[in-house]
Image (cartoon, rainbow, N blue to C red; front, side, top):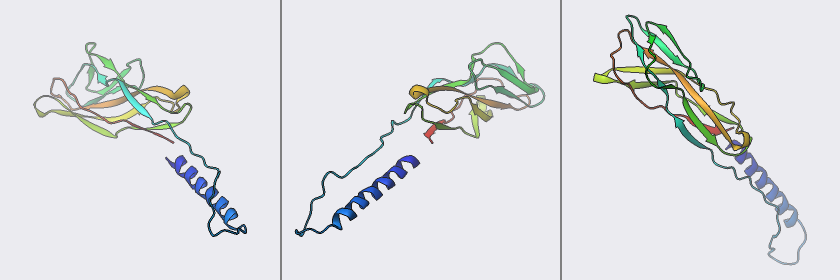
Amino acid sequence: MGRLSVIKGLLTITLLGHCLVTLGQQTSSASQTLTNLPAGAIIEIPLTLNKDMDLSFGAALSGSSAGTLTLAASGTATRTVTGGVRLLSDGYVNAARFTVSGDADRSFSISLPSSVTIAGPSGASMSLTNFTENSGNVLNGGTNSFYVGATLNMNARQRGGSYSGTFSVSVDYY
């Protein structure tokens, strides 16, 4: 958006410059029609963002001490744990995957949340923090797919069950 504003400013200066030159000439009429003035604009393709896969940490056990389960921002579903958390092999595990489309070879930025709370059974909750992405931030050929990972913070003896929630991802040209 900043680039479009600069171009509009240059266009305004260009048009005023031509008007001043034309109006400064001697004419015999009281009014004059200005034609064939140069003009220009850049129209950008809007960015679109599509979610291809949800973020899923899979199954884990909570121990007698708090801990974390971190899911890397990659297609390999790499999980690491700290504290009293133990990984289980059952459950669907993957980082969230998104595809962004727009102007070819343009750079873009990604905004991720700092923290999100997910809800579980009987009012239990956990937080997701340390969101990461692996985009490269360039629309090679007009598209880019990227993964988003995060850290799940588990309390000691976290209530068992299924937890879910939502988080926001936004993209902007820069």
